[in-house]
Image 1 (spheres, rainbow, N blue to C red):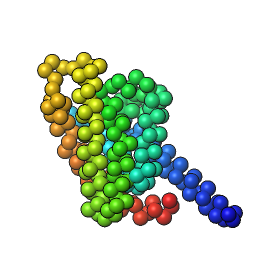
Image 2: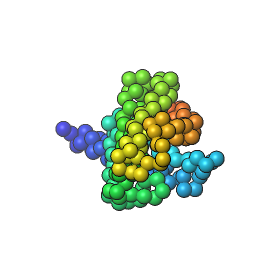
Image 3: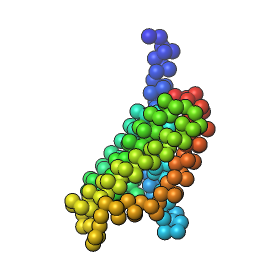
Length: 193
């Protein structure tokens, strides 16, 4: 291997680490933007938006790794989760399933875009990733309330999904925007990866 090749490989790895760190930081910002921005009673977080972008822009594997890094930073106690929370006790929170889902969101979005790199593919990837978010997060929430958290009186599986109807329009709009934004940014990011 030549010196130039070694430098190129090291430069590429360094850029990958920087991108992973960047998306971990964006997730922390996106999680806590709701502390400042609530519209019509719906807290506006950009976590799903940034998780989708991580998968679209970094690829399925690197995007998922950036979300794993984000989760571990929060589990280590750094207040990067929504509401400036963090620590191992968040694992038993009813909303921890959404944090777990971010790994799968990034992987799903990245995988679909890798197979279908058109504008429609980017939007489909974003919408599919949002569906993954809702599936994992809502099922975790339901299980948490039923098994280890105090469930509200008359709490049912249907009620858990009904609660998700409130943020759904916002998440669908942000998913489409993430797909379009990712479609525009992907060629720029590819030059540096």
